[in-house]
Image (cartoon, rainbow, N blue to C red; front, side):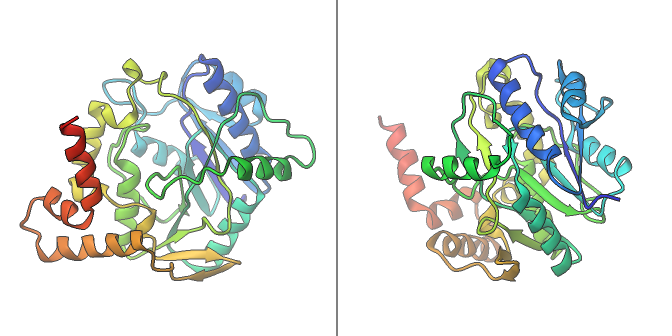
Length: 301
């Protein structure tokens, strides 16, 4: 029995840059100790990549009318085909290192029900990684030099015990909203939402959106609106890493330090609970006046 099963639905391996960063990511996963990797879908080149990289391939993931894999099907297949205590859905452009497995072990020891997440480090890369001895140290140094810690708005992986998330809606992968719902769901169930940013470096390999229809970003597609509907509305897809209940620091759980961003988020949730009858945007405009001013400025440009 392995500690952890990573599962993902990669994009087609037709675009050279996308193919390269996906191979980098998947190779980093298969090198992790006590980890199994499951790749889901029938995308071009996926079966060959799975064989090449030593991952397990399961093709029969359920899709929506547009052919986009459904999160619910991915979770079901991972649960049915894994004997691990922990599961982790992860985007196929994310490089994971040994500190990731240690964070998973520590979280499992400290909480029975939880979800582990973190901010990512955005990383520009144009060539395959050299996974020779010492690759982690070399990569960490290169990532730190670029110094692109992503804001706490996007989540690229969710790690959780197999007993959690057994009722995931039919969200479409690669579109906005479902990741925010994952945090909302954990908070509603009173599971620990653990931000491991202080303990783990997760490297996101930067890319464009040419793989999506019309080259539009994920939030500009109709499946995003459906994801928001399935999540229960806009209020449930505003959750971010700022809504974590704990941080993993030096192998121990602590309460996140109060920052201006976290304070504003707590204020927003408080006002939404008190003034639930007001339009959602009105509360956002009160709490985040600078963001609202930016929108106004754009209108009058």
